[in-house]
Image: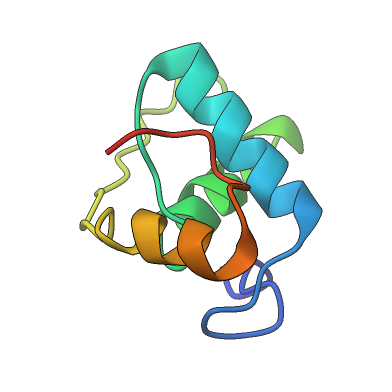
Length: 84
């Protein structure tokens, strides 16, 4: 899957930020806007499009990156409502 880079490394848009905040609010699971936010957004979108067979087991590895949330908010304003 390569369609979820949002323009490249460190690139983002409001849709991604909304997804990250909503994901944390719904699941209490922190994801960052550089790596894992894009990963989870892509997987979620693929699921919603029906690209996985019903009953499939999907494994997504959260590889970190949470330390970037504070820096992101410092640089762009308090866009991410997640607490690390």
